[in-house]
Length: 154
Image (cartoon, rainbow, N blue to C red; front, side, top):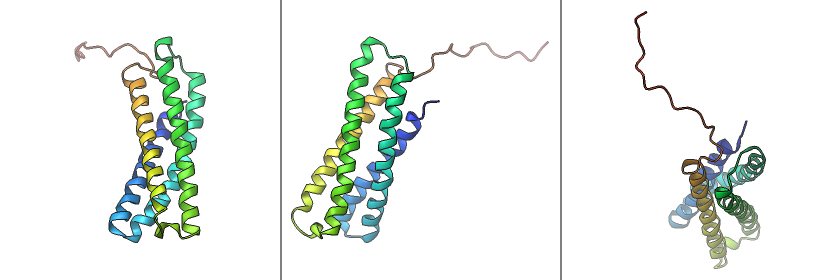
């Protein structure tokens, strides 16, 4: 069974929430936004790593036509960049916490990195959606259901 379609939704949701919470904290200074952002960033980064691993495994198991090959590679590449972006973002976040750098102008490096990472995350999701919904990559092809009305008479 392919776990990539399951895992990837957790990565997208958790990491999107993490970035939104970071910017809500920046505006509101509410501690619960700050804490939630950190928790979502850790969980989402773990799921992003799993999404890349399961995506690479799925690549070996799924039939990919030549006309979609470039799209699949773009999806894989942007997903890998997004994963590394969030790994770096998590490291930067906890380094900034350790050295109290969020009180200094250098904090904007962190927020720019968050925008960069979430941009690649969304781009990866759009490419994945195009692969599945427009090209049927990884979708089991089967006959459409019968349009006949069931008969209850024998």
